[in-house]
Length: 56
Ligand code: SF4
Ligand code: SF4
Image 1 (cartoon, rainbow, N blue to C red):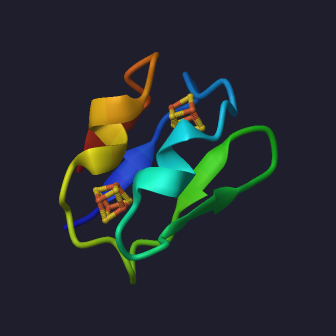
Image 2: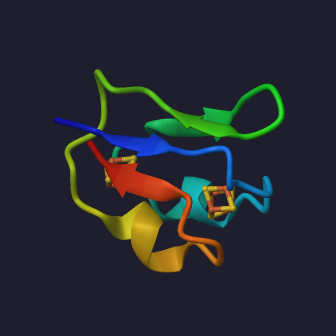
Image 3: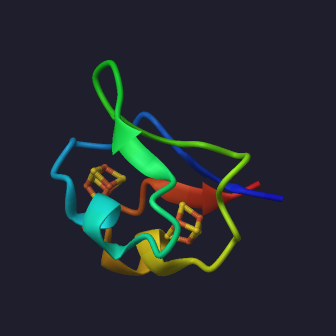
C-alpha cells in the first residue's frame, strides 16, 4: 500500500518536507510519491491544502 498524489496537486511542495522517508519529489506538473518508499503514514495528506494525496 502507498499513497498516491492525484491531479488536484498544485505543486506547493508542502508535503515533500513532511514525508519521513523522503518518498515525495517534484514530478511533471505535480508532485509524485515513490510507492517503494512510502510507508502509508498519511502525513502528506494531513498538510496538503487541496487533498491531493490519497490512500490507494
Ligand atoms: Fe511519505 Fe507518509 Fe505520504 Fe507515504 S503517506 S508519501 S510515507 S508522508
Ligand atoms: Fe501537491 Fe498537496 Fe503536495 Fe502541495 S501538499 S505538492 S498540493 S500534493
